[in-house]
Length: 109
Image (cartoon, rainbow, N blue to C red; front, side, top):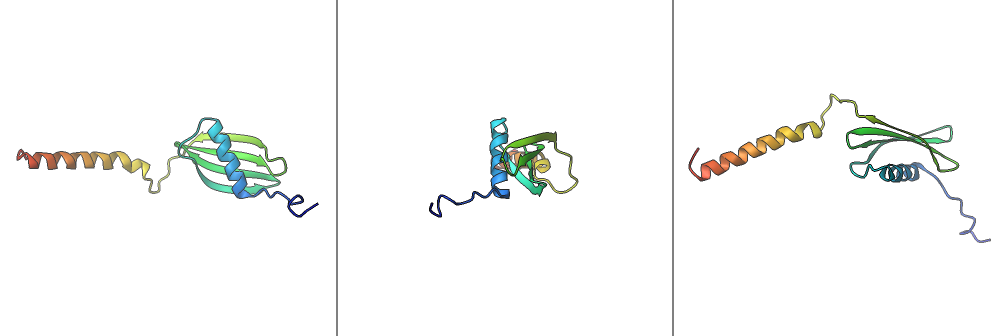
C-alpha cells in the first residue's frame, strides 16, 4: 500500500458546510445561502445558515457524513443594521431623485 491509498479522509467544518449547502440546494433553496456558524458537538456537526429570509440548522453525523436532522425557521427580526430593510427606502429615494433630474432637464421643476 502506498501513502496515497492509506490517506485518511478528514471531515471538517468546511466539508460540513459544503454538505449542508448541497443538501439545502437539493431542497430548493438555491439563492442566498450563507453559513453563519458551524460547531461540533458529540460527533454531530451543527451548521447554521441564513437563506432567503430564513435560518436553517443542519445536523450532520461526523462519522457517516449523513444529514441526521434539519430545521428551517423564519428569521427573527434583528435590531441591528440590515441592508435588506434599507433596500426599499433607498430605491424610493433613487427613483424620486431620477424624476427630479428628468424634470429639471425638461425645465418643468
